[in-house]
Image: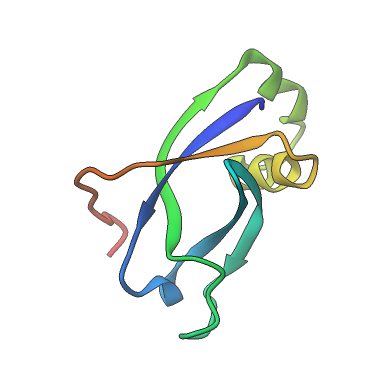
Length: 90
């Protein structure tokens, strides 16, 4: 894994990108899934651990693009964070 993303559980994930996991490996994200069709209730908590190798994937894209690429090549891990979390975008 080149990066680890903290994931947190929300009651209604329909407003977020929801993580698809296999074990600790993040396989991708489903953006704003319909209620009842979510692959999980785990979303990006906004905290990351990045190895220096992650910069090899940073060409001209955003951090979100890098996470998508890393999940495609199975180099993005998820850590389920159980502490307090606040969505500051709302």
